[in-house]
Image (tube, rainbow, N blue to C red; front, top):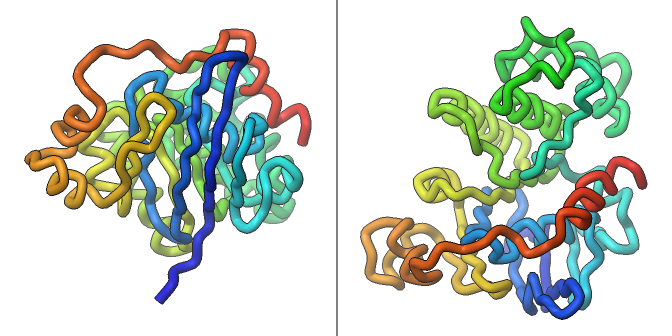
Length: 268
């Protein structure tokens, strides 16, 4: 039986001047699944997510997200997903509560449901006592928790998470993933995430794609990847497929990163 695909990527590439960040990749994500996208720093993970979420236009290739094209049908795609960016994207001059109100209005959460939904999410991430405090007074971990609440507030069909639990303690990380898995099962919310925590990927993902130097190296379950590389852990399988050298971060300029991080909210 063919399972419904909610993300379809075919022959996708992205170049920045002479540098190829993503090089002719193809993959599919099944509706209601949890899909991990792993790779060393600079491998092309974040660039791929930015193309999937309408922030970057591909150099070539095609994408379908919930049946829509991120290039020609931006608003339909944006209405389909929530996202937790790798880079901070909260408004520091607003309170935690105001950030969530702004996002719920942006994503058309019905007015009669907003307060209940916001209160529920801000309690979930343990920030209810700080809901009226400005974001500029928050620690990095607190901001991350609020970004996760923001990404979930409209119960999206797809949740994109770019290193979502970076900087979170193990208790909070476990709490967040339990909630995401609950939504995944209850609402068939598809989860697409990147992480450097191999244990997290192995535990949470139904399928895993490994990208390196802009190319998809291997796709499979954690068990399949370990079997193919004849290793005992996903971390060892990952190292065997991508090598041991230390990598630089994604090779986009600081100016470009700032521009595309803010683009989504300014062009909706």
